[in-house]
Image: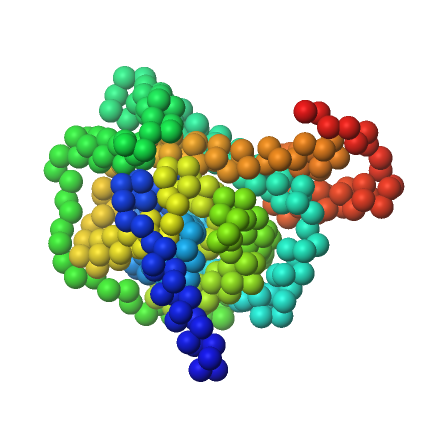
Amino acid sequence: MIHTCIKKIATVRANLREARFNRNELAGSLGDLGTFLPLLVGMATENGLSFASALFFAGLFNVVTGMVYSIPMAVQPMKAIAAVALTEGLTVSEILAAGATVSFVVLVLALTGGIDLLNRLVPKSVVRGLQLALGMTLLMKGMQMVAGTKVWFATDSMLTGIVCGALVLVLFHSKKIPVALLLFALGLAIAFFTDPKMAISIGFTLPRWTPISWSDFMSAFPKAALPQIPLTTLNSVVAVCALSSDLFPKRSASPKSVAMSVGIMNLVSCWFGAMPMCHGAGGLAGQYRFGARTNGSILFLGCVKMLLAVLLGSSLIALCTAFPKSVLGVLLMFSGAELAMVTRDQVRRSDAFIMLLTAGACMALNNIAIGFALGLVVGSCLHIGWIRLDEHSDQ
């Protein structure tokens, strides 16, 4: 036990030594805002989730994640739970119960070795299909956010989105001018210009105990927890580990450690009103795309989130709501594109077919579990010879 603790401490110290704090890491820390802010603000305004508590724990787990991993491992909202909460009007207690339930299942898989078995059994082409589906979904969602402004000439408009997209393309490989920082500064300027009398008050806010009843767990399980479980196990564990191996082959994350991280974070934070969180391939891709290469970006982001949550609390909702959707949409578009592009290694005809089949089913049916099952079944049939495809490369 003591030996294990000493080993863990040594790992944390080694990870902290890897951290870099420069403008590229700072820019990379903003790469996931396009996913994080809309879902957090949506659940805070529509469902009554505590904005301050959600922001505080998101920051806390950013810091913990930055200590556990030396790569920019993102902390994201659980998207299926957020989507159900916003469309079906879940109560705060139901949202928290759903997050805790998913985390319990993932933690059991980690402790029993089930997550490692799943990681070994799932073919790479199926994982790539999941990554392609999520990447394209984020890309299209970003475009929809820009088009959703429905105006051409305004501070938050389609023209603003086009200009921001052009800036990203022009500064795509620039290390002197981190484009995410530039877009974030532009977004803040637009937000304050749009609402110059925005009320942001300084105070002192800490998370509060939020009780959850058994009936909340029972009602939340079929509506929100059940659709989130496959998304978390596949995208937040299997796919994010595969992506970490692609981007950081010498520092990749293991499925067991990621699953334990996801499990523990929500089983703690759900009792204090925090939004259900996980790690995600899209977040890692987004932060990498905009410059993050070490855990320094995550440590910085976590400290800023916690500080803002404690000092400004729920008054930040006004700023987040005013932040231009066109700018967030562009950040989301390029994050999705970065994630989708990791799938370009599937050059064999059969692998490419399985990847596209999995991605197409996930996107068409809007269901990760069905897409995964279809890709797995057809992939197994190809492997044992029940289905045959011409194996020549299309290069």
